[in-house]
Every structure is written in structure tokens, then in C-alpha cells.
Length: 272
Length: 241
Image (cartoon, rainbow over all chains, first blue to last red; front, side, top):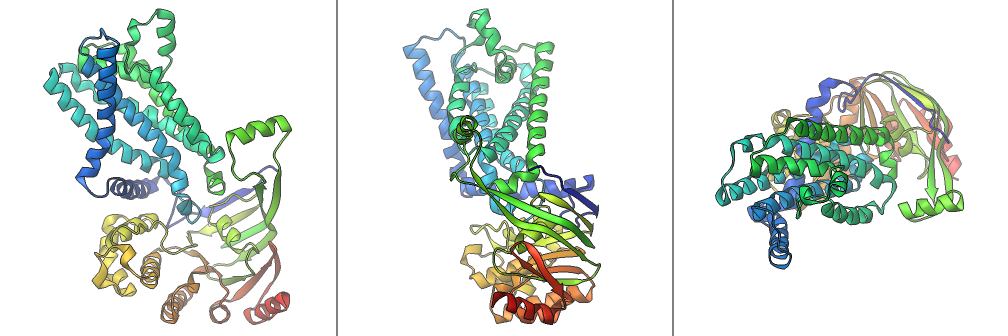
């Protein structure tokens, strides 16, 4: 059963004109309305709601810090900051991918009633996560500042942050598409996210591994992004080639993820 | 202008409750899925001219909503093609995207964004919408404190702000009390006098008689007949008898 339909259209939508570039402003408007609504629902319109969301990475930090300084003696310098950077940023990756995967089914009623580019839903859910990620990053920067002071290269930290956002959204688009076809994707991803945690240098240092293993770990784009974050926040170290490769990986991830999503966009409402 | 030629829509209904990766892997071994093919629409062809007001009748499951969803590009047709000239505005449900926890004002902005209106544009329409919905006093009330009739009024007032040339309307007249329905009918009279193209799915025969120029009767996903409202209503009755 092949799809052989040709949808021809002249003019376009006035209410929902999705064929023209000039509609970008309208789409951005929908993303903003959805993201703000999501954010308010998530944190119940309260500052305390946000504090609760901070508690999770902080608690994780406490546990890993205890285990890796008291049980296994880590030899990494400035281990608390090293660990904080890893955990706070991994929390975003996890949050962004999970909420994007579930975003389509949460908005299935909307999808079945009106046409708009379905990517808007994923963008909106990511925006909500990005907003809390920014707040968390401010907290992280304050912590690093008081614990050790920020080096001059900390000014470059928006670049790896942008890379992490691009990469996470690429994965998010891919997962959102997969979830439309396979409902057990959320269970599968829950396991994978845990595995990725341990093949990403969050609690350990990639350069202390034997070269054969570390080369493998470097295949993971998160390794590079976390490397950059630590270069700029902790070691005050700059490597242009490393930076460009990381940007390339991140942009590529979003392009591939988005392209896959767009290929299946028109079929999504039927799948929910 | 809408022109549809041999439109069909097939839904595959899998026997399994949920589509999972596990299920797909098993299907790979067993040689394919088990599913039912269901023709929601079969070879539907019709034309709607500029400024025409066309009613669609048919019992539940005859494909009325599926047809509107194909024309609104919510679903992809399985086969056939369609041509649409003009801006399409699907009104399949009132109050899409409404958040019960938010105030009436917030919901205006959310719903408005789906109609393509910015916050600023909605602010300037706020007064007119609230007046139409007769909810001026409740602009800062939470939406879930409103009665369902009030919500319907609000949603309809917002929905009617859209400016399009083709309206696809799915039984919105059915909700609300007598007073609300009269108000809706007035809005449809306005659309008709403005020579907008309207496709109206309705079970209310008095509305169909008053508003429609022509009626299409759907039966099991195919067009059973089309013609003048009075004749089609009689025909529809003879079918169900």
C-alpha cells in the first residue's frame, strides 16, 4: 500500500499558512506559547517548583562525590567541579531527550485537530528544558566561581552549551520519531540513557583510560562536548581542531535528527 | 475552491494492542503483521466552488471527519488527489490547546497562536472576543472554573477571529444550548453573506436546510448522493430507514 497521493495547493493557509517562510514568526509564536505553558505546568507557577528540579542533579552529585572520593579514591584534580560539570550537563541531555520523546503523545489531541509543522511540538518541549538548563547553568557557574574561580576562557562556555543543545535536540527528534512507531522506546531509552551515562566521561576522566578504550569513548559526541566544557571552565585550555570537530558533530546530529523527523512528519497524527 | 478526485483513506488497524519494537521484531520472524485494513473513505470525488456552502451528512463512521482531516492536511490520503485554492481553516473541535489550569486570558493567547495571531494582535481583539462570549467579568478566572457552556462560547468566539476563505467545520453547532446555537448560526450566516467557502458537517437538519446550497451524503466512506438540501435530507432518511 504505497502512498500515491498528490496534494496540490495554491494559495495556502491564512490561519495556518505553513508553506511560506514568512510564517516563521507565527511558528515561533506557537513554540513560545507552548513552551511557556509547559514550563508553568511543570513548575506550578512557583519558584519552589524550580528548586525541586535542581534537587535531582544536586543529589546525584552528592552520591557520586561520596562514592568516588571515599569509596574509590579519584585522583582527578578539582574533582567536585569536574563532577558537577558532568552531572549538570548530562541532566539536561536526559531531560531534553525524554521530554521530547513524550511530547508528541502529550499533544496528540492537538495534532489530530489542526495542521502545523509537528516539529513545533519538539521545539517547544526542548525550549522548556533549555530554559531550566540555562538557570541550572547559572547556578553551576556560581558554584565554580566560588569554589575555584572562573578562568578567562570561561567566556567561551556558550559554545559547548550550544553544542550540547544542538546534539540533544538531534537525538530528541530521532527519539520522537522512533517513539511514534515503537511505544516501548521509552523503556528502551531509559536503559540506554543509563548506559550512555557510563560511556560518557562524567565521573571518570577519558584521558586516563588506555588509548584503545579512550578512542572508543571519543566516538561519543558527548565526550567531546563535556571535554570542551571542562577545557573552558576548569583547565583554561584551548584546542581549535577539537572545538571545530565538536561543533561539526553537534550540527550534524541536529540535521540528521530533524531530517528523519521531517520525513515522517505527515504520518505522525495517525500514529497517536 | 476544492476539487477532490478519487480520494481514499485506508487505516491499518493492527491486531496487537500496542506497536512496540518487540512486536516488530516478532513480526519479522513470523513474516509480517496481522492487521485489518479499513477503508474510511473510498474513491471520493467532489468539487466545491468559490463561496459555496456545502453540507456533509452521514451516520457515525461514514467518513465525514476523515474527509475534513484529509482536506486540512492532518491525514495523508492513501490514494487520489486534491486541489485546494484559498486559505483553509479547519474548525474540527472547539478549544484546541485549552489549558484548564490557566486563566481565560492565557488561554486566549494560546489558542490565538494556533490561529496565527501574535500576543499583541490577540490583545487588541480581547475586548471583542470577551464581549461576544459574554465573559468580560471572568477574564482572569481559571478556565476550569467556567461551565462547559461558557468554555464553548469562549472557544467559538476565538475561533471566529480567523480570517480564511475556506472553512471546514465539524459539528461545532452540536454543543451548547439553544442560545449558543443561535449565536453560532448567526456567525455562519455572516460567513455565507461574505461569500466564504464552507464545508459543514452537521446532523442538525434545520441548520443544513437554512445554510447549505448543496449537501453531500456519505455512506460507508463513499458518496451516496449529492444534491439540494431538502432532497438529500429525505434521501438520508430513506437510507437510514
